Amino acid sequence: QVQLQESGPGLVKPSQVLSLTCSVSGDSIATSYYAWNWIRQPPGKGLEWMGAIASDGHTYYSPSLNRRTTISRDTSKNHFSLQLSSVTPEDTAVYYCARGTMTTPTSWGQGTQVTVSS
Image 1 (cartoon, rainbow, N blue to C red):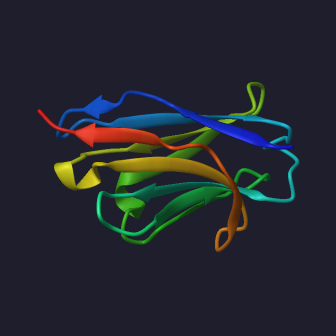
Image 2 (cartoon, rainbow, N blue to C red; image 1 turned 120 degrees about the vertical axis):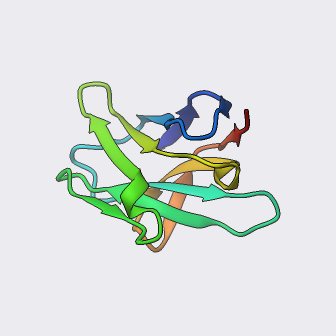
């Protein structure tokens, strides 16, 4: 059974880079059939797909966040990471990592709250 766990700072200052890591067990990010996604939910709003990295290393990003988002991976540690640059308070959200297709993630981490504030 796959398990995903997000980790990273819970507070980021405006204009800085938000960095999160998703540690995966029970599946290999390098060989899985599935993609590895980052999704967020701002307070009072719906889920927003941010991007994904496939097992072949190709990355895919939401057009609205493309210029600020980088997804990378470390296959030796079986984890993948999110970097979101130039953050503003509007980037405050619960951030999730998830396995699945890019349209239908099916296995989720528990989520981690990130607040952007000075």
